[in-house]
Length: 278
Length: 278
Image (cartoon, rainbow over all chains, first blue to last red; front, side, top):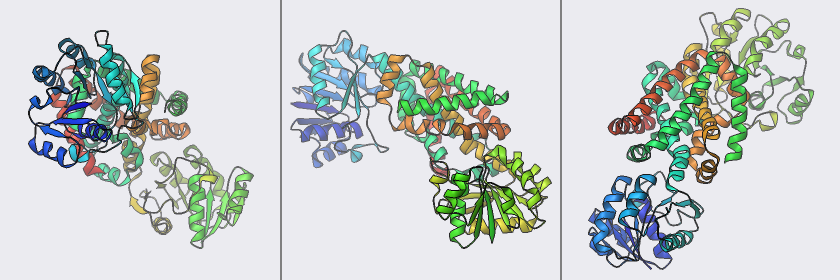
């Protein structure tokens, strides 16, 4: 199969490498000529260009750009795709994209491969990065069933855990387990750095261990990605943030009111729930 | 030196093992005879008993009980200590203990070894667990300087990073980097399990990866310890929780108001601050 990949960052270049090693012909598109060159040098693509026209005639196109570039990219692709071309994306939010994308391209299937590393860019591309990781497809009623099956087959070939969900179910689920943790963790860093007396902060720095490191990790990650999550998954994220703040307020109230039994009950239930959940 | 250890859990038994292997004579006290037997069998103590009287004549006593038992333990020890006996503790909060402990025992030096594992109890005791880890001493004006130096020497012999702080500085610092993360993380688990629609929760469970795992880790930990932190470090923890909620509210407001530049600025600053802090 000929597969076009638009956006040769960590996700796009890793998908390209995996599918090429399975025998597919990979056509890569990047905004940067230097990235196109690296894709060829590293054997991640057979052909590569900064010009979308190179994608004319490919069977499937996977859009791996930042979230805000997905819809504009589909519009730019229209002159080069046929009625048979299947188009999918790798964006981490789906409701803001799928309905509009399906209107302009009935063979569009929303997708979200949930893998990655702390690095970004083509240099960080890894073979086998998606194996045993979740890959969610979010078809809607208007999605062409053959397009769904075609993308599903490509996903299965990566040994992913394939899930189907509606765009809004997907967005709520990732809000809770991915986007909310970023904001919870970001608030911790911002509060610690902004609120603490300098002498205490110096001591805190010396004492900080795995508890602070782990809880603050995702809040200190890629700021562009975090902002995109908030912007394009605003409604689901706000819902989870408000639910979170209610629980936090409950804990603050219990501590203020010396209700230690309530704190103990919450923490005991958490210990059971987290271990069952993960 | 003869060192008495009261409370042979993870911390007490690990300190006992390290100091005994440095040539000190270790006298262990536990509420359970079975724990005393294990301490002897494993070579963690030279003598061990459930009766405090065994501590008569030792040079230094280290209280490694849960926080709420530290002051009662010092009172029980009074018949067996002399004017020269140095007493220290391993509690993770200090203001609630040090002033009162010093009143009844002028050779008391507040201490907090910041090491541990996810396990607890004498079976989890490890040699070298404190090496290269912070160990804070929190003397006050009334503390006998010779007692401070004597405890400091024992701490240095473990190859710890030795810090001095006032009890209230210590409590604020650990509130921010240890106790606040527990409550932040606990609220995440409670909100996720309590607020999410069952179908979305099932999907979230399938998608949960390192971001959720890390951010929820300390909130799913030992509930007794978490409750003790909240109870005995209430004021410092509430201060940090209120500061944290302010930052969280700021993030929620920015998302509600579509102030994406503000989210981006906060996350960018976080990325820099966290990497400098750790």
